[in-house]
Image (cartoon, rainbow, N blue to C red; front, side):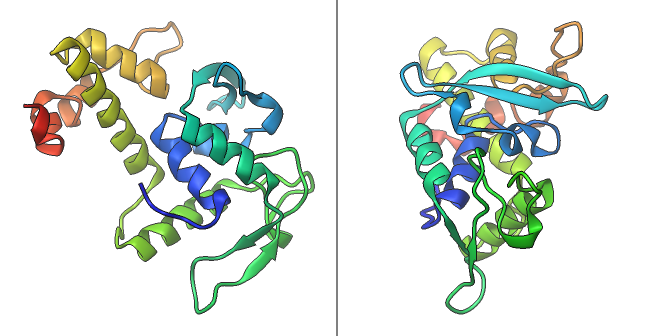
Length: 201
């Protein structure tokens, strides 16, 4: 994972990698410090679907992500990683973990999906990954979970793929059915897994 000075940047990358995204990054944007249960390492997530309806779920997170969320929520300034020296902006005080900076934020201090995309793009440019995106980071996290499950069960079949899809909240129909076929066809398969993690083959 990238080494980023700003916790506001680092928390975005790690959260996406661990399964926090939502439609138009709504799970990231709506994340508040009060939604985090440090004792259980669970966080309450709010996704806004196509009908503008809020969907909630709980997700278990890692120690590193928990610390990043706590640290990010305490930051008061945001230093841009682009440009000589980087510009420093005041973060708007708010209950959100990922805060808005300056005039770009909403009245309540929430940042927007464009700002999330721009930060990811800037991180990609600085780290030499020109095509870095929220989906690419999430997919990397899905493959990491696939590796972990494969090491536990020595297989990557529908049971494991459904567990991954549920964790990352992708491919789930309103009736709870998981359409895992597109993910299986594209990258959640042994061929891709062994290509990315050759040491487990």
